[in-house]
Picture 1 (cartoon, helix red, strand yellow):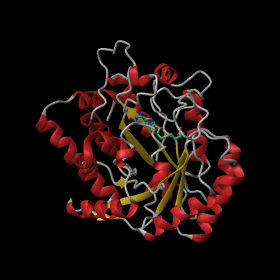
Picture 2: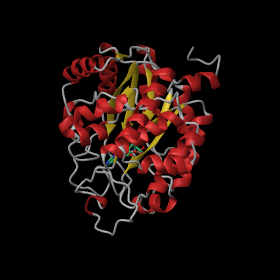
Picture 3: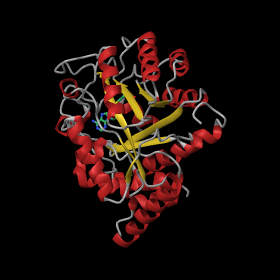
Length: 352
Ligand code: SAH
């Protein structure tokens, strides 16, 4: 699929044609990653952030946020919850928080790996290569870092001058990849100023970066951010931040990288409800990330509004999501859900 074909799918409004796209994506999902829906337990370990991303509710300049940083023992308790609920992966995410030191994360990863068989994914923002090396040595398996948009001018518009430029994020993704992490990235759909052509290029870049995991969700305006009340003129080919466009990106990503792990994201669910989450799973996605963050912290990790409303007791959510997965004819995954492409590439590696 080339740029023009992706562009014409993104512009497609014909129901019959779209039904075909969904069916093709669903078939590619079934053939390449099967019927299991992989469950990754998400723990939002710190909402401290030194960055000022124009879209993000926990940006440094938002002084209305009460900041927290979880203790190692609290994170370990979440890892035990993940195991108890049968999840194969623990995802540790945070703001850009330098006080999450190299050694602190190394210690947490080592303890999780010593105590459980969980795969560990880190999503801690831009960090130096030395940190990544230390965390890989401690047993971390995967790293998630969205590039948000492949358009350097748009990237610069939504990130403050002192933030790492797009080229640095992309360079870090290559380092992550070459260190042997399963590599995850993604974008937001419908960022003010995002054009169809730039979104189509994002999708091509997913493949070029040889990603093992791709997460996409709609941009959701947060009132305490500059983009939340952006009144600049929209380009005439502005991408909407709606669920239909998000499904298209999920489906096209599945067709371009057939064995990728693709979540039906929390942002999509916040926008479209639980039906939307299921449609994501039926249009190319094969991963759900249940939130295991203790509720008192979860409420404070408000990268977009209404995220807190998705807050829920982990056990109640777990029972519901597994029932919903079965109701659409799928199977809750119980293993780690490793990437097949990654395993092939590093064959004989530690994951077999
Ligand atoms: N600090 C880490 C984690 C960021 S939060 C990092 O920089 O990688 C994870 C993702 O949430 C971001 O990469 C971004 O794509 C998404 N996000 C943040 N604010 C959002 C918003 N207002 N609407 C939708 N998605 C948002």
